[in-house]
Image (cartoon, rainbow, N blue to C red; front, side):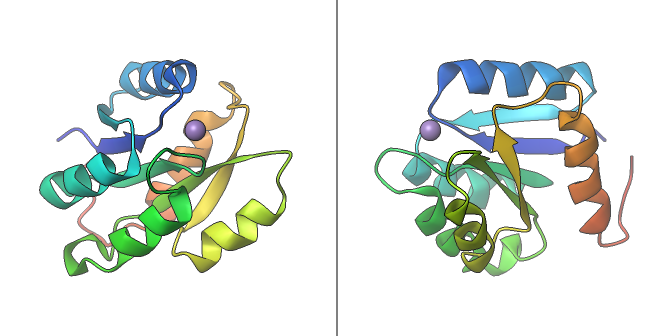
Length: 130
Ligand code: MN
């Protein structure tokens, strides 16, 4: 089965790039453009990984991560924050909010998939069917 990634991202260019890279590498992608919809989708879809932009409308990424982590059924789903390189404090806050780690913006297409695969591998619970 395809691994599924939920991308919570309000920037169309980033969403396009990330979706392109993931789909090209055989992942299924669903997208949410704000945190409220993202939380609903995560609870419904139980993806294999959640890619979470920190700067989002309605609820920021920290608040979204905290809510996601409050669902038992999402406890084992890695949440990867997408943080701005210019905002170093974001990373610590992202981890404190329950994220497994972070990827810096701008997304580097040459290293992005390796980063994603590292997070999936590190957080794998043994039912890996890839
Ligand atoms: Mn954003």
